[in-house]
Image 1 (cartoon, rainbow, N blue to C red):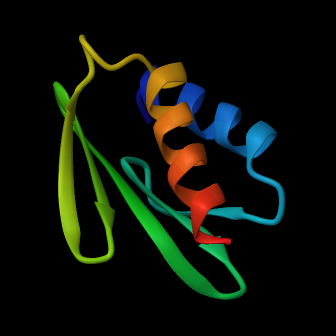
Image 2 (image 1 turned 120 degrees about the horizontal axis):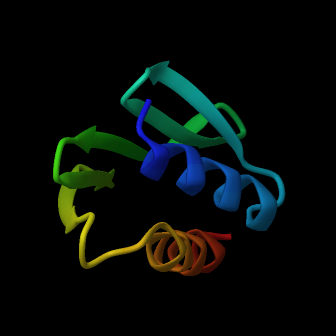
Length: 81
């Protein structure tokens, strides 16, 4: 598991009340609430792929720091409630 993914998961757990992190593999995890997957996060080398509602969003790790991606995901998921 990369440091990027570790940091991202730690920050998401701190900011997302009611959501759980489900590890699928060392490089893939899902953000789950009420037994429904709301987002899937995949570490693919230089990129992080976030799948939400069947659409893939590709983030470059160098430009998108874990705290920035955390804010994006928290903002999206808080609007879904």
